[in-house]
Image 1 (cartoon, one colour):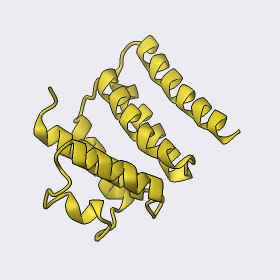
Image 2 (cartoon, helix red, strand yellow):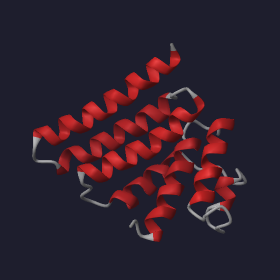
Image 3 (tube, rainbow, N blue to C red):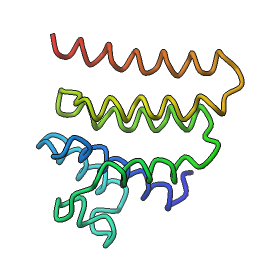
Length: 140
């Protein structure tokens, strides 16, 4: 089971990812509120101002939260799980902004220095490529 602090941090990262292009799309808003509700964080005093767009999240905050969530030596599995969670949000509005793509790339880069095996890095890269392909298919 994921520790409660990690669940809260994950929701913060998702909110930050939604804000990363400067605004929250209606589909992202709905997705975030459903996730926060499901995780029991919709009324959390720390989460609520961001969730209800009373306070914008700056890109640097989002990246700081990612770093805090993953720690100094993230495992490939942790990075993949975070990429998967963020992808659900990113694809909810049917478009991938440049800033959102940069965030996914950053996650891929975070796994790189800590992985001594090339196959693990290749697996993460394939995961990201698969996500991009899925997005392109949705666009057509």
